[in-house]
Image (cartoon, rainbow, N blue to C red; front, side, top):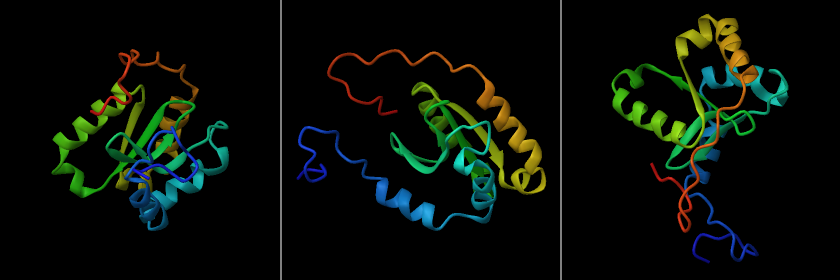
Length: 142
């Protein structure tokens, strides 16, 4: 089948990160669950968010495809992986997403402030779409 779902002849191959993303959704951190409580069911400005979604070679914590917003929650390990996080954010921006990063401690201790930053981003005009890819290229593969 070569990565295609049964009956999906000619369709895009399934992202190989999907099973891992599902596992992350089922085993979210306390901080992710706290923020999800406010983002789910279009509670924030009517914007639909999804959690633990594969984009390119990454799995993002939260995403709104309609508003082109990615929200990443960073724990202590991210202080050691700043270069990786910068590359990841650059890739997401190249795909037309705004990236909001919050420390876990801010989400827990300043939930209302974090939600206000997200709310303000939801109210922003959409950024222009990324430049179209040349014919024959399917993804940016950052």
